Image (cartoon, rainbow, N blue to C red; front, side, top):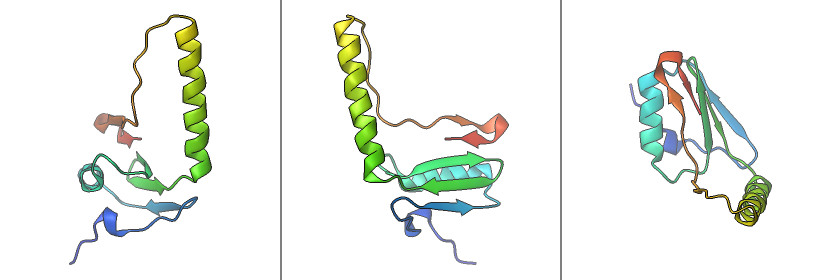
Length: 97
């Protein structure tokens, strides 16, 4: 049996790809295969993996909101740290996003 790497699957902008019967180790391997700089949004719940490729408009809104929040926190003199994308995982609940 030949394996297909997740990086070989193309999800077009604005589209979603759903894979069924993915176990936790496969999910971890997929994240490793994609590396740190992937642009897809990956969610995992009880064996179902969803790969979503956001439209450019989504990133534009994200950036505008972050600028607004940063300006607000600066004005209120509240210290903060900005982080990029992050993956949250709970193996015991078979959830990742």
